[in-house]
Image (cartoon, rainbow, N blue to C red; front, side):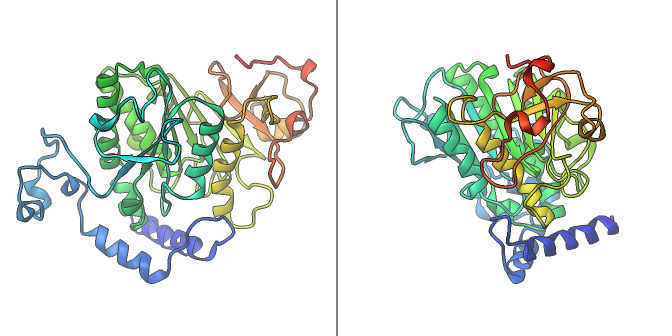
Length: 363
């Protein structure tokens, strides 16, 4: 436990000095203040009942049941921000009952975008993905903004992932039931710790006999993640993962049905600090939302057993596309190279192959 805490301290300082990634960097005093504030709050103590007084909500953790039967809320810790063609500037949805014909597109895909530690639903990562979906799809995009919780000490934030997921499950299951949504149209996109929240949501919905269509993990976090909360291919019908700082901040292991390792999956071109590589998964996925051959070059990726085989150009198994338009039939590990600046996709140059020489799967 001591080693994990020490590593989290190091991670905090990495965040403080890494200004190249475009993430908001907090002052040391702000991080420590948030850490102390949130460290004192148990995950279950966030759950408040409408019938309880403010005094009872401040009671100790032992007085709060593990699974409160009442409808739970984390107000004002988490907010769901809905974007669609009807509300392109976004609107905060406090309860599913607020969804109507003026803000919600019936029978359209639902995208849940979930950020990670020390981030926000209003920052570039979430915004770039949301903007891509607004431009190129007819979807309901919910950004899950859990910034107030994600701003805490890293180990405490990890400890509270399941509580955040519980709140998302309550919200999403109600939408599916109230609107008669086909769960196959639900796609969760999570970065870092948000990837694991997505997996927990998928697992808990499955326990309610609701199997969602897809989860995309953007460089799922590695540090302090236990097996029971780690993103898994069992969490949805299809799980795809993009690894960009594997073995460092991100998990290098195969977690999904299809795992993509751009540039080997550990360090990205144009990045010096590892936090920059960690955030590149956002950029690659956002770029991939533009339909292939309609204003963008696809992120072609080659199926290989290892990056060494990819570099030697000895892979012959197949080809698919990384990102939003990947084949739902894709299985295994895929590798590709990218540019260091936008546009990041190198097309076929990124796999050193001719399209005619490989089995191509874009269904």
